[in-house]
Image (cartoon, rainbow, N blue to C red; front, side):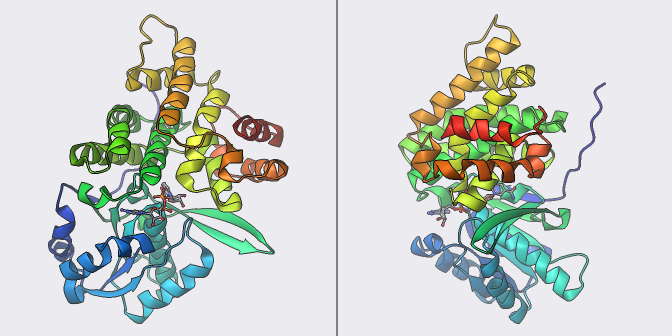
Length: 374
Ligand code: NAD
């Protein structure tokens, strides 16, 4: 038997078209009375904030609706003051990974302020495929002396207690956020499969996640209003996030976090550019796991050895991302070539890079991957 050790979390997870409308009833089961909402401006434009107010009525006591990408530290104090003033007893993150990350950050900060070990529970209502709703992790971007740096915090108490997946919430998701956050989900599957802490549950989730994503994402990109495709894509993103929640990520995620926190590249776009390059870097050390990626994608690799199948996975992922019309070079995402050495040395310090299944010990290695992607 292979050795494995991992942690799973107690969460209530609800799927289904229209489940958003059941938020009040679901929340009542837990006895929460004073909810604070964290979300971003596009959700206001789409009427989702008004809809949640309708559904929750007086139970919704406060709202912070200005969440910016990558959870900025200067916003946290403002949001925290709202939660505190209204004595929130649960924090709702509605939207993408940034809104859910902000909800987790408030929960932990409130706990620290109140000296409360059990933390204010988080409710996640995701409307992208980024996957934060399933994990005990969030990032906060700190800026000082003109330099931004995203710090990742892992705290099992911030895992959302209630998760509501409603595909109807994703129908208006812009095409590029749909595709790029979908590639973020694919990246969770790939890095969970070759993770140095891979386990049987994550492997099963990641393989099924890839199958759903490869089938559903192109359909969502082609027609955002295809409820069936949106539904399947949420299942794929959920499985990907479940795999992420029990494994450590690697080089790919470490690079994406530095590109987001210090070069302001949207997370999904960073994922879309870096993923094939990180896979290529890891190919000689993780051939049998990358071969699973190829098989789960449905690539025709029968009769090929693991190395050849892994090569097919790298090419297949690159092609899949290209077909979605996403950027594939860092220069097209605003990254300046002169910044690559500094980004590479920051990445080397990231926990995810240190956890990569193939050892990364020198900034020359991270810089080579960034240059290949530039
Ligand atoms: P995001 O949360 O920054 O959202 C991207 C954009 O999509 C925003 O402008 C948002 O307003 C908009 N948006 C969201 N839902 C919408 C909808 N239904 N209609 C229209 N617009 C909508 O991006 P993301 O890719 O969802 O999340 C990325 C962030 O989450 C990064 O900071 C990343 O590090 C973090 N993340 C965390 C985890 C984790 O486990 N903690 C996992 C994945 C990503």
